[in-house]
Image 1 (cartoon, chains in turn blue, red):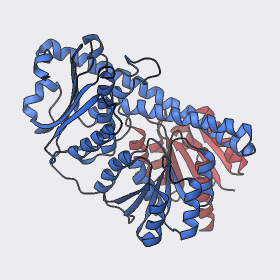
Image 2 (cartoon, each protein chain N blue to C red; image 1 turned 120 degrees about the vertical axis):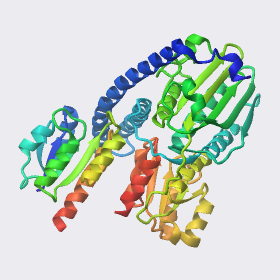
Image 3 (cartoon, chains in turn yellow, orange; image 1 turned 45 degrees about the horizontal axis):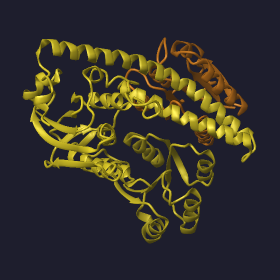
Image 4 (spheres, each protein chain N blue to C red; image 1 turned 30 degrees about the vertical axis):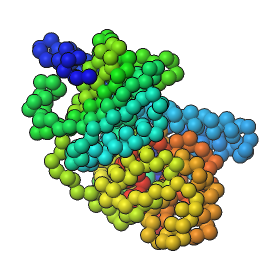
Length: 390
Length: 126
């Protein structure tokens, strides 16, 4: 499918005016939603605080304690939601570095490949691997993943082809198309194209609005594309969409190419990181980002390897990051490995279920010195490492 | 016992911080915004300030700057839940201005209390 023969190309005064109105509408919704999220975070702090106090007062392993843990876990979900809303309203600061777009795309494609239904074929034509943009790699991953997932869902019934491509375009040539100021000589254009059910113009008008969804209730939050829009706007890029009912959709993500390869941030001293994880793909993205910031990250997903690394040369691991999705290495394993091998490296716990008892164990034993709640950004990890060094 | 000034415009949150700090035998002062904080601040009484960032009537960044001027060795913890320029932004700015630690909302009360104990313990030892 060719972008040009299916979109009534986005030019002319009328179209530009339309685009402007849409942008203003999103801006207004963003300001409102951001304000609510801010107040909501205050309220959540109070609920979380009292729940924690309550948890200390009830006997552990009692039915009451179980209920309080459920409250805390619900608060974690709410926190995730306010975070998404703040991202949409561009009120969350992204940890921007020079990112190789090609690497992020390949990681995302690899991730989607492993999870896609059989009747969907992914074709990627990513050739230029020297395109750098100034962005938060984990957020960029999120955007691409979101658009690809939407494409796959649009082909749910009959299967189809999902094409993903990366090319360079000149800023001067897309000025009109983007309808915003051009901030770079060159733009990376990521095209994600599906042969799915397509969208009506009325749907197309509203897809970036938060909570706008065409899916059945419970099948998606309706926040994905609005969050993506916030992330891309924040790095002065643009997402354009064209679609035809019954034929498919094309998402074009334009990102200003950065000329400078920014130097890694200066670190106090910790360099070698060991990430204990269950999800290699997401962690690889994180690792790319950490490398760019000057760290030397490594991964481990099972106990035997972890023991081996810590026994052989544990002196060279400065900080261990423990993601709570690591199925093969449980809290108790970690505690025994730490004591058996007299591991000195401080540990950062990254969790989203906020499973209080397991967290407490790691904290009380003095192993976990920092706790981060998902979703974590590169900045969160960076700050946590810096705190460990003070 | 060390004294703590809470500067926070959300009443419930302020109340929660106050009651849990009183329970730990700290002396507690409260203010609902920056302006009130300047009026209530007593260098001899207050060892640590917990301040929100986005508040009507003088924000938390001003609180940090002004109070640090009045008492350079004052300990400060900034808490914030997102606003116009983003919670990360403001909190990092707060740190740059001299806050000893920053907690994005919603924060864990237990972690905050532990941190306060730690900071003030160290303070008393030195």
